[in-house]
Length: 198
Image (cartoon, rainbow, N blue to C red; front, side, top):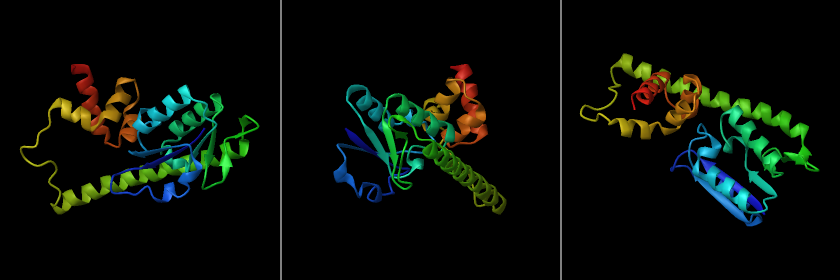
């Protein structure tokens, strides 16, 4: 069985480009979700795990390595899992398989390490620009924060930052939870405080 895994970050983005070669695959998994969240905690990642566990999966294809995620540790963890299960990962934009004759492809590993780090850097730059934009808006007096009367319950707050919350519960550092959960260190500190209180 050959599977294609596609991902976009938000519902206003299209999967059309990633699905151009859809007829080649036995199964296609389309997902809308942040690349900052752990692959196997995403619905599409969980579905792929179930298929691998129950069927003979030979290959998984992605259009580019950042479809798996934007955290180098998570990307390498997914690749290691595929290697152990003898599932050959093919990254279309570099034209390489993760395995050659059922053994790790050293060229693939080298290129993926570089591309994975680039994906992570892009995400960190994005979050940094977002933070700077908020600071500028505050200075100009146009950023008002949360609207009055829109206070969230603890449950709503946890649900909004579920990835970061789960990471912190499993013992992750504030920095890691912040990166994977796409939120600030301050938000993670509030979540950590809630974990102690609940």
